[in-house]
Image 1 (cartoon, rainbow, N blue to C red):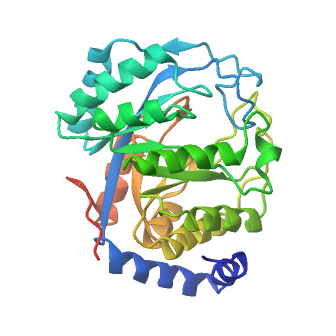
Image 2 (tube, rainbow, N blue to C red; image 1 turned 135 degrees about the horizontal axis):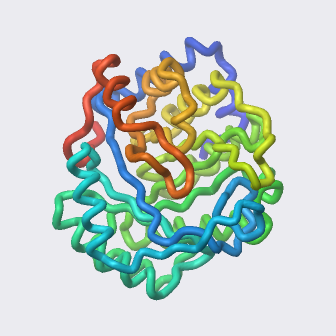
Length: 316
C-alpha cells in the first residue's frame, strides 16, 4: 500500500528531478518514443440524469445537449474502420447515463465483436455495471472498460452528488473480476487541490489490481456547466500528476485525454517525457473538441515519436 505522505513526497520533489525519475521509470517498463492512439465515438449522447458539474450531457446543467443514440451497428463499425485508417489501434464507445440502456448495450456488444474482427482493441464506457452485464462484455470480447473515479474521495461530492465514489470502485472491481482491463482516471482543474490530485492517484495505486490504463483529463470548461469559470490548473502541476501516475503505476499506460486541444506543443512534449504514452485522436471526445489529426501528426513528427501499430506489451 502506498501512503498519501509517501506519494506527496514524490510529487513535491524539484520539478526537473521528478520528470527525470518518471521518464526513467517509463523507459524501464515501456517502449520509448511510441504513442498509442485511440478513437472515441459517442453512441448515446445527452439526457444523463447524473449531476457531474463538468459534463455537457447532464440534464442538470444548462447545456441543452439533445439526446442522440446510434443504434445501427454498421455505422459504428464504419467509424471504427475510419479510425483504423487514421492510425488508431483502439476504438472506444461512450454512452451517457448512470447505467446501460438495454438497447444500447445490445448494440455495443454486437459492435464490439465486429470491431475486434478489424484487428482493433475495444473499449466501452456505459456507467455502473451489474454482474450479468460484465459477463456479457467479456463474452463478446471487450478489451477495456472505462470508468473514471474523477477526483479524490474528499473532493468527490463537490463535483458529483448523484452517485458515490464507492459505486465507481465496485464496478471497477467487478470488471477486473471478469478479466476485462480497466481504464480509469480523473479530471484535473475542477477546483481541487494538488493534495486531491495525489489522493486520487493513491486510490488507483492501492486497488488490488492496478488499472491497465490511466486517463488524465484536463478540464474542458463548457458553457452552461457549473465549472465553466473554474481557474486553470497550473501546467507544471498537470505534468507533475502525469509523472506521479507513471511512478506509482509503472506498468500502466498513462493517457492524456480531454483538454489536449488547448495544450501547447511544449506542454504535451513535457507530458510525454514524464510518462504519458497514449492519446485520443479524432475531432471530438463525446461532446468536446479534440486536437486535430494534422496537428497531432506534425507534433509527433517533430518529437520523433511514432504511433503504436499493435497492442502494447509492457516490459517485465
